[in-house]
Length: 341
Image (tube, rainbow, N blue to C red; front, side, top):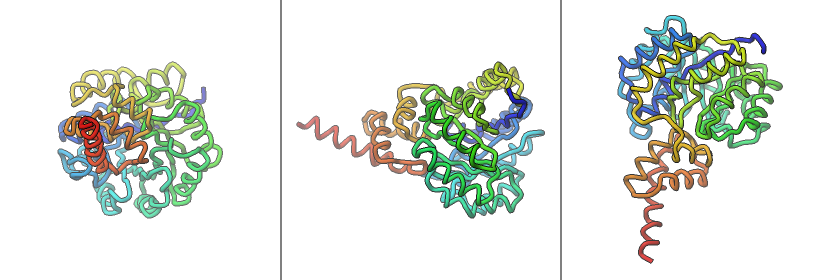
């Protein structure tokens, strides 16, 4: 196996925010940053689950301020870089400036897989701030590899130094990951990353395939903490990488202990593959919709799987959480009409 060292970007404190309704406290953020740093991860991403500016009624209010989330992570990371996520339209360049001032050094600018053009000013701003700048193409299963590459080339032209294939719905199969990552490696001059969700139980397998196809960066989280069925589990990923002699900087036992003794007790809802998270992967719906759909299903007495399936038919993407209540209401009316008959 190649001696190229894989950069591990941990998303426990960002994607993991979704699984805890964005309610990490500063004490929890400090503790998690410390154990992740000691375990040897290279980058620790720390923002609201929907990135900079995400704390809102629509996406969920965070327990702590953006400043406190980022500065707490920066203060407690001794060797790891601290990163932030920004979705244009939710986060602004001013948010990015603030994050840089507070000590973040990695900026990941995320768009839907067909909308890379909206990232231009934000990527250029991050580059101008001297940040390690990453293009993050969400819902990468929604387009064919060739079209995804064209979007990646836009991000490359704006100055991104790394571009990610992002499986936001956990819907990609191994062959689909292989084709996308391979095409990026063959045609881009940037580093390539991969972000998995585990809704089809392929988070680790897909991450390994991405590495085998040349990916330079891989996302993971403690105990898979993340939206839907979670991300690729850090401790599981490291164990498999060790068996395959893939080079990285993470200590397996420290990652295991952090997941078992610190992360799992904090979980609000077990991060696992259940009928709802499996539906996300099967239908290709954005993973962060899970808890919104679950709540709406209870409120309107409809099956949340039907909500997710209807959202998939509508082509919903990240940022359209406001559709969920409308779909639940519509399904409730349909259910009532059937019962009347």
